View (cartoon, rainbow, N blue to C red):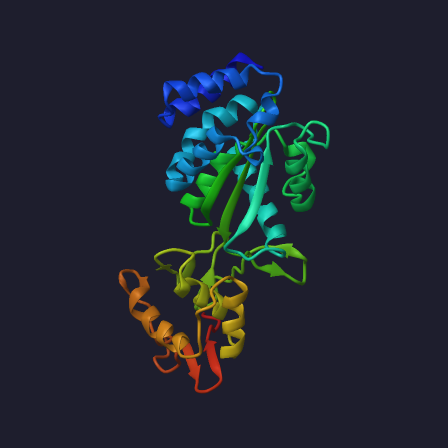
Length: 306
């Protein structure tokens, strides 16, 4: 085993305050020819299972894994490039998984295959197909995940080290991700950007009301998701049934016909525009921004402004 990788693994376990006995046992494992098999989480390796438990008890501990990942990775792409690659993967995977529990697997093994990857990880890679083969070994994966979380594009729900071998660091992350809108006309993935509308949304998911930023607590809140659904269907009636189905499909099953009007009322005093509540009326002072069609549903009125 590469001495740099070996020392990084030992340092990693020390950061998590493993005992001297544990570190001694780890050193023995690192030097055995069967090391790659002993350190897999699916092999019920006690040290790795405990490490994953400590990481997931406080997800800020993910940053402690970065030096170990970097020791395995060859030259990495730029952070912006890696973020784009991860988002592309999420946009593909969201068609198959609920947006609040999307799995992604990354391995530092360049051009992984059934011979250089543990069989269980290779099966998952074949099933998920998160990245192109040429990208493995070149992603500063943890930094990019944390950057996307800081930008409130994703939320990291869990993180597991699956494998630590001679040449391979493999990990699995479960994320909550807000779907990007797909433009059916061009078949490209992008967000709606119409600055000439009363309400518009930029590429990062931030909403604007007549040019002023709309401040939500987070892009993952119920109010943000409801507002975005209405915005995506601007000037059209959104039935209560359609709204309920949208939230159920995205893992929120407690939304009811009764809770939706209550959420709209809350939205107008919790969400701020220039430190003031989101306006209930358009500039004509007559038309409601979110119109309630009693018994039927809601409509977000979003006219073109001069």
